[in-house]
Image (tube, rainbow, N blue to C red; front, side, top):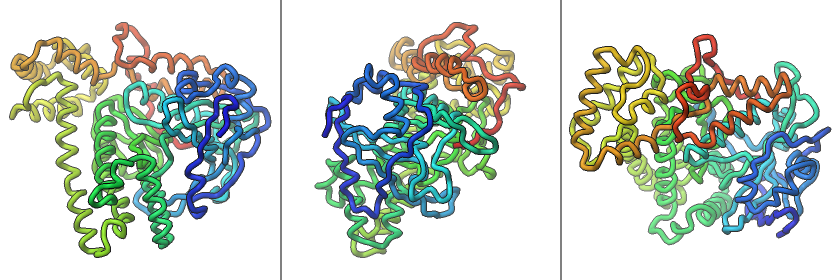
Amino acid sequence: MSNEYGFHFDNSYARLPEALFARTDPQPVAEPSLLLWNAPLAEALGLDGAALNGPTGAALFGGNQVPAGGEPLAQAYAGHQFGNPTMLGDGRAILLGEQITPHGERRDIQLKGGGRTPFSRGGDGRAALGPMLREYLISEAMHALGIPTTRGLAVVGNGEPVLRDTAVPGAVLTRVAASHLRVGTFQYAAARRDPDLLRALFDYTLERHYPDLKDADNPALALLDAVMERHIDLVVAWMRVGFIHGVLNTDNVTLSGETIDYGPCAFMDVYHPDTVFSSIDQRGRYAYGNQPVITQWNLARLAETLVPLIGDDSEAAVARAEALLGEFGGRYEQRWRAMMADKLGLLGEQEEGDRALVDDLLDWMRRERVDYTNTFRGLIGRAVPDGEAFYQDAFLDWHRRWRDRLGRNPEPDSVAEARMRAANPAVIPRNHQVEAALNAAQRDDDLAPTRALLDALANPYEDRALDDPYTRPPTDQERVLRTFCGT
């Protein structure tokens, strides 16, 4: 371990069998410059923010120097991408090491865009500035919204272009995660048909994320259950704020339960369960309304890898895993209904008509194409939201039914209002504002819009002024219909 600049590395993943990774150093960049620096996260990690917020940090987080105690490596993993299995690995990401924070927590510090690795598959290993800024922006927004997520510590400019459709500015993102263990990591280990390798990965995962499960009657089944629980909560949180992941492949499903990979992701403006933004999701596999079903499907792929660890009798092990996964729908429904009750301020035991209230509102929102975030935020205090559509008879009838239900709450209106404020953000990273900020950074070398947007997203549940631009939905001309990976 080292204490230079506050780095305290203890690199447990590097002590696993080397079949799970390849040791590789970052490739230096031409002129590293620190574009964004996350001072609160640096402090939480125990890093010396004053020393690192400048040329020293640019060199370290651009890949030109390896922090003392670091053991750079690229992780191996597989994945089902849009339902198709493939062998993958970190083609542009390099894990510097695992930081032990002042509170004893373990956090991966990874460079995304750090150069070629043995898994690059012909790619350049670099990343474009726009997507790295997008990941920093959206992950910080998710953190402020209270949703488990990886986070951005720094964005460093390369000082050189990368070639995509055209030459664009390059950058390196420093990503911090509870770990980068994924469903795809288990798929990779299982595909090698090495029982000792799978067992080593399994034991490591328990030790790192679920140590209380080591003494369970069936630790492998308990792990599947625990990961399922975390991802049910995660997807319910995504649905609450209208987030659409966009590439919910098995290599983007973490064992820790954090959101990872903010490529063609987006937040929904107009409500519709079929909403898709990702340019590569041609058939809507990862549409907003499909996310719970796809999450269950991804968890089934994890279950397949765990079968040998669940029991020696494979048929019995499969049956036990299937029975557990069969509980996904009921558990999700229960938590989704509780979440929607919070969004609408419905307190106490759920009544028979509560589900109809939710369904009728969502159906009306879909037909009338109203804004998801602003509709729910506008209901706080039993108000009628702003907008002509909300004075139609259909909505006003729903509104009367809803007020009648609120009148049967067992607690004061102030409690219902507090629940609604905590469940319904006033501001989200709206796609047109994100794109405008990224365009300013890439085309004009202007980071001011990005920093202003970050400031607006830092306190998403606070009330905003009526004319606040960050709460305004896009006009038809501003609307963003497609998002791209672009890394």
